[in-house]
Amino acid sequence: MILQMIINGLLVGGLYASIGVSFSLVYGIMGIINLAQGTQIILGAYLTCAMVQFFHIDPFLTLPVSGFVLFCWGYAIQRCIINMVGKGGVVLTSLLTFGLNLVLINIILLIWNADFRGVNPAYAGKNFELFGATIPYVRLAVFFVAVVATVSLHWFLGHTQTGNAIHASAQNKRAAQIVGINIRHSYALTFAISSGLAGAMGTLYVILKPVSPFSGADLLMILFLVAVLGGLGNIPGALLGGVVMGLTDSFSVLCLGMQYQKIVLFLGFILVLIFLPRGFFGRRFYG
Amino acid sequence: MTEPREKLELLTVRDLDAGYGDAQILWGVSLGIAQGEIVGLLGGNGAGKTTLLNIISGLNSPKTGSIHYLGEEITHVNTYNRVRSGITQIPEGRQLFPGLTVRQNLLLGSFSLADKSRVPEELDFVFDLFPILSERQKQLAGTLSGGEQQMCALGRGLMSNPKLILVDELSLGLAPVAVERIVEALKKVYREKSLSILVVEQDVHLCLELSTTAYVLETGHIVKQGPSEELAKDPQIRKSYLGI
Ligand SMILES: Nc1ncnc2c1ncn2[C@@H]1O[C@H](COP(=O)(O)OP(=O)(O)OP(=O)(O)O)[C@@H](O)[C@H]1O
Ligand SMILES: [Mg+2]
Image (cartoon, rainbow over all chains, first blue to last red; front, top):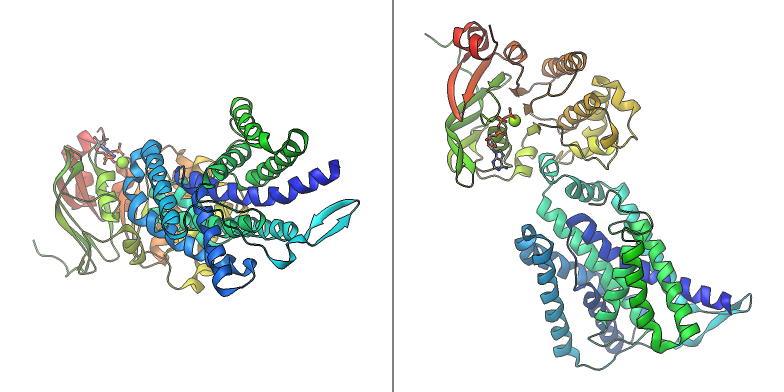
């Protein structure tokens, strides 16, 4: 039983981690709290539903498309809109992303109505046993894809020239310009990567759980927690944060019941802010 | 007086007015750098030297006036395009990327190089110039000593294979030995690469020794200019800057 909980928690934790990382990245590099991130994930989820419905393809196959669409969207809004108030500080940018969130929700409402949507692949019920615990293949696949996405992002940021340029733009804006980095592009790219990751994670999320246009709010809570737990801007930290969140999630559902899940999350958030405001590792050089 | 021979102008700054907000810092500043020349820029604290360099590198923009580089006007060209065309600033206070390694800092220096196959060559040149950087490749730049940081900053600037380097207060906060080491390196760079240098230095001796022509900036005005040798003999400069 305990083992089953741990496994459930770990599996969903991979997804949470990735979601947290996508949020943390933008904060770490640009100091922007993207309140639209939850809904960006939901937009990715809706795109997946639409593609599955129209083309009758496997939902996992839609991941690159959701990711790419959100990537382009992220690039465009950062370069054209957020960039304009970037100097206004965290309050202004937060207001802006809050507004963007409302716009996104309404776009989703316009196109898809307020109904819950989900995908139900034929293999959804299939699972296997491991030491007496049940592991659904779908959850395992979601975990795997999410972890691969997060780890590749981490690798990209640490080991490519573009990744270094992104870090450089965060660490010293003027010096970044001096070495010839186009920092506007660099910031837009960072935002785009974050949104693209969110879109891709939307695909994974909707494979696990149906979504409504308003589900972004729940996700926002989760990604706040994961990002804060991991130390804002810290990618390896966010991975750990995701797992801890997943475990908290599954334990609270099991021990207290579904209806208390959000309350536990919220209490957890407050406790974290009080006792671990800098997360497990504190903040490193991500911003 | 007759000019010995026609100098090929690399950079020409004409009638620059510039400042921050309402505060005007530079007043009608004009200055020229010929190809292969080392030009010195002298001036006390707050005279506007860094401001001028930032305008040449494109970090700040002037109110009026123009900048020409290799015969083309670049007054409104972005910093990253200026770097691409060969203008590199070695900024005051080093301005490294503290959370990246020495190697990553240096490699970012060649971010603007179109021909990436040159990178190993440039890196070898820098390591040859400052062997210590080669030993400290994996160390985070923020943890280097002041002298090492200045070497890293100079090295990073050289990684873009520049035609013009703008050196701001190379000697600031360094022990005399370290200054000497870096100045030797700079001379070596000048000998081995065909580039021009604009040197901003508080150390007037050093500045006039390095440069062939120099300008004196006082509260945003160019008050004197001429061959460095002559300026070194100028009684007024000796009095106010050399304290003799
Ligand atoms: N970002 C800024 N905003 C407002 N004023 C500035 C800014 N940067 C510089 N200044 C002002 O401009 C003037 C010239 O500064 P600048 O840094 O160009 O001087 P400097 O000649 O390089 O001096 P130093 O030798 O001390 O480096 C100073 O009075 C300074 O206070
Ligand atoms: Mg200065």
